Amino acid sequence: ADLAHSLKTPLAALQAAVQNNGSDSALLEPVERMDSIIRYQLQRAQPLASHSMAAQHSNLQQVAEPLLRTLQKVYHQKPVALRCKLPAQLAVAVGEHELLELLGNLLDNAFKYCRQSVLLSASAEGANCIICIEDDGPGIPAQRIPEVLARGGRLDEQRPGQGIGLAVAAGIVEARGGSLEIERASDGGARVVVSLPVAVT
Image (cartoon, rainbow, N blue to C red):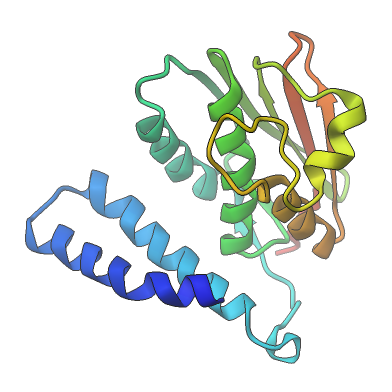
């Protein structure tokens, strides 16, 4: 919460500068997304009694596609072949900000550690939505999976980061009654399989 509060003012200044300089939406979009994430984190930091776990729903494709565009810009110097297979009408019983944080953490890892390929796919299986994120990077050894799912656990000490991304993702999934599993992809990379309840509309 303290970090989110401390970021509010400089982010507001950055947002104003972007708008005043007439920058195009390619720059304004991620700045506005950052603002939305900070407001969400401030809300999460409030006492638990003020939070509602009422049914929410988010369209998977609508949340994922802008995020993927942003990640392609962030990793523009890396030749990432992105494959995205998302049903247009598939919605999950997770709030939009939660889904954005969940996918953001998992996809950022995939882009960061892949050699050249990332796959995002999803399908409905009964009452659940199965989301799969694969990359062709070095993968995660089975014996190290509990470590990377623990807050602060990291395998790669050469790159910057706090080692909380996978733990945050797992926490979001668990809070919504889902599951998160890390497997080895067929080409040796990492495959993260997330199961979340399908939204009932």
